[in-house]
Structure formats: structure tokens, C-alpha cells
Amino acid sequence: MRKYEIAKRLGVSHQAVYKWYNGGQPSTKHLVALSRLLGISTDDTLKQLSKSKTIKNIPLKR
Image 1: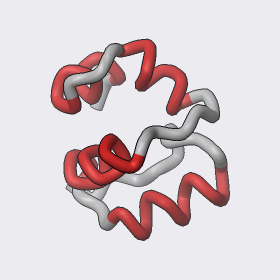
Image 2: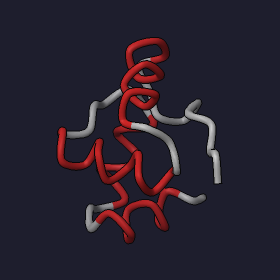
Image 3: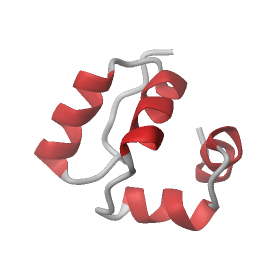
Image 4: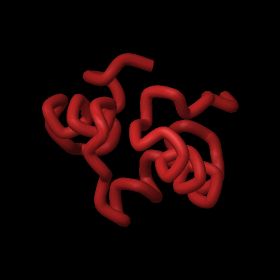
């Protein structure tokens, strides 16, 4: 899924998603929505973020 598509579906700017891909952390609200969008649990998303500090390595389960 492209950054623009993620941004559109979450209602955020593509710059926000770009920041998440480069080490920025999404807010709790966006973290929950991102997890749902990616088809993984919030817990798995948090584990991945704590491990790699970016969303780019989070595997899609959809």
C-alpha cells in the first residue's frame, strides 16, 4: 500500500505518513486506525514500532 493511500484512508497528510516511515511515531488515534488498515493488531504494531522505530517494516496481513 502506498503512503498516499495510507494517508487518504487515515485522513492525514502524506507528509505525516512519510514521517512515520522515517521514524516518527503516530498518535494513539492514528496507531489504532493504522493497525486496522494494515490488518494487524495494535499490539503487533506497537511491538514493531518499538523494535524498528518505523512503520515501513510492518508486515501486511491482508
